[in-house]
Image 1 (cartoon, rainbow, N blue to C red):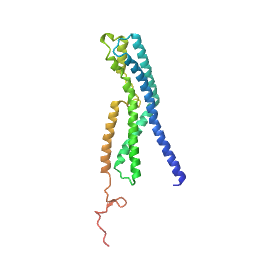
Image 2 (cartoon, rainbow, N blue to C red; image 1 turned 120 degrees about the vertical axis):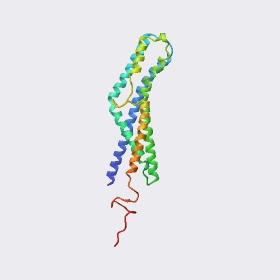
Image 3 (cartoon, one colour; image 1 turned 90 degrees about the horizontal axis):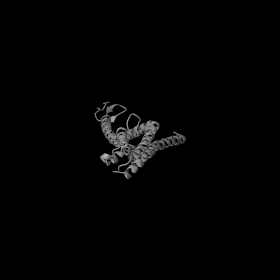
Length: 228
């Protein structure tokens, strides 16, 4: 391979790596913006925690909450496929990196790079999952304020908003495949561990013996010498 081809391949590799990281960063930023909108509503509700307020106030809060939910649905329609591809790509790469742990590396620099890239990939992936799951966490926090409202303060608009928060599943995810919540993150982590154990077991069973000659297809130690 000539030097120009090597430079071109290296450029492609770096470009895809930056694009891969940018997709995860883009999903984090979009998730933080939506979660912040829900957080602003929650902070306003915290100021009136335990107080009896008018129907007009709760109607205004409900309208603001609906607008943020509509924003979440709009963003989900736009980047739902992107979230799906990013999650599948990250999880596949994590499984492959962890599977390669058993392979010996020739140089110390290879080991340092391998472990750094593996740890960085795991941290980046689960950071993206946690930030994306914050949308669902912030969307259900108004229920904490509703529990502090006295019984005689439950006006029709309060009941309507409380029912909406309980029934609506507001979260970012891969359209109708899955939603990224805290519970889903623990499920994904458990799935990775399970599949990794299966892959390691399958990988170990299909390894050729150390004294196996791949070219001749025989075991050198067990083969009898040919007499001349």
